Length: 167
Image (cartoon, rainbow, N blue to C red):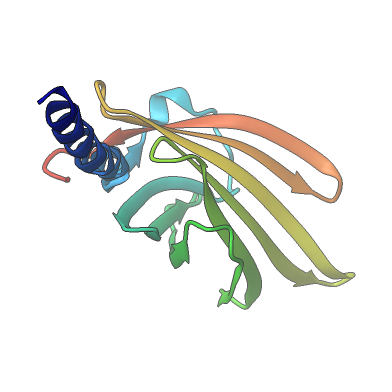
């Protein structure tokens, strides 16, 4: 009798763990708006001011909206897998190589991108490494970043608030 009860308990636990983990993934889903009160002025340099995230299994679909000081918006749509596989796309005449993976399954996403622009002196790579985390209690997405442009590194944190009425 004890063996069958512990077998049933183990079966329930085995079935419940994937359900709980898949629920954690959904925390990323939704539209996230940059909390501009926590961001220093950036002049005309593009800043990620909104991101729409949709996780389906191990697929990560994002629509990123960058804005500049003059009010222009530059959208970028990416459809990645969360297995670290690299993808290439052309964004506004620039080559962009991107990959994403779980840093901590269901909790933290690592997003890496290299965008190559072509100027008067040849190609210039802009490398960005982002770590995404969601605080589900306060509906806040934190994106910590390390950006490298011409051997100059900048780091920071962007705070996004979940738009009301989104997943």
